[in-house]
Image 1 (cartoon, rainbow, N blue to C red):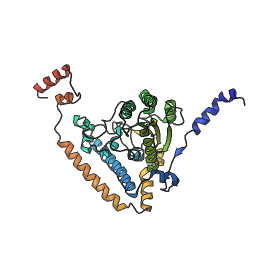
Image 2 (tube, rainbow, N blue to C red; image 1 turned 30 degrees about the vertical axis):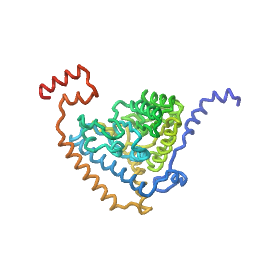
Image 3 (cartoon, one colour; image 1 turned 90 degrees about the vertical axis):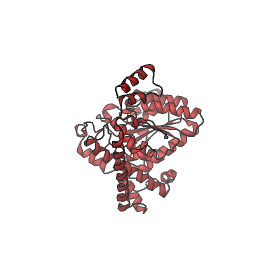
Image 4 (tube, helix red, strand yellow; image 1 turned 90 degrees about the horizontal axis):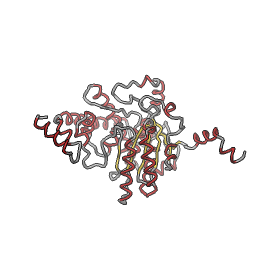
Length: 369
C-alpha cells in the first residue's frame, strides 16, 4: 500500500487507537503477582502494604457509614466510593505531604488520608463553612464544578515548578468529567508549561448515568491526554499495586521537570452516583454490578496480604472497630459544632470581603444572624 493510502486508512487508525494503551496490572483478581518486575518497581515494604490496606479499609468503612448517615438525613451531599478504593486511596498513597491535592466531590477519602479531619468532612457535606477550612494541609475543598479541578491543578503545579519545589499537584475526575472542557484545558495548559501535575481519570463506566460508550467513542480516555501532548497510561483500577505504581512513577516524572502525566484507572462505582436520589439500576443491570464486585480491590489485596501472613480476619475486624469508633467521635464532634450564621457564611467566603459583603455581614450581625 502506498504511504498516502496507508495514511488515509481510517479503519486502521481506529484499530491502532484501541491497541495503543495496554493496561497496567501487577496484582490479579486472585491476589497473585503477575508482573514481578512491576511489583519490585513499586518498592512497597511490608509495613507500607499493611498501611495501604488499612487506608483502603478506612475508605470502605467511611463510605458505609456516610451512606447510612445520608439515609438518616444526618449528612447532606454524599458521593459513594465503594469499588474505587484502589483508584483513590492507592494512587494517593504515592504522594506526600508537600504535594497538593485538588479533589472532586467523590475524593473525600484522599483528603482524610492527607490529614483532613473526618468531622470537617461531615460539616462539608452539611454545607457548614468550617468544612471548607483546610488549615495545615495541602488540599482544597472538593470541587463541585466537574473538571474545574484540572485547571486548578495545572495552576498550582506551575507555581510549584516556578518555585523550584520537588512537589506536584494531583487531581481526580471521573469518566464523565473527561468530557468537560476544563479537563482538556487543564491538561493542555499543564503540558504547554510543563507544570508539576498528575491528572487521574477514574473511569467507573457510567458518569452520573451515561455509559462511557454513549458519551465518547474514544476506546480509552487516556487518549485525551495525547491530545494535550502529555504521557498517558491506562491502569487496572481494581489493582492497588498497579494504581500505586502508576501514581508513583507519574509523580517521579513530573517533579523531575518533565511535565504532567495522565492516568486512566479502569474501575467501577458499585453504588449510586450520589445519595441524592440516584438509582443506578435505571441505567445498568444488577448483574453488571455483581460481576464487578467479584474483582473488588480489597478482595485481591486481602488474599495477597494473608498469603504473606501480614493480614487476617481478626486484624481487619479490630481495625474496622477502631475506624468506626473514630467515625462515632467525628459524628458527635460535627453535631456539637454551633450552627453557622449567615454573617459567618459570607465572611468566610472571602479572604477580604468587599464593601458590599461588609454591609451584608453587618446587616445580618445586627439581626443576630
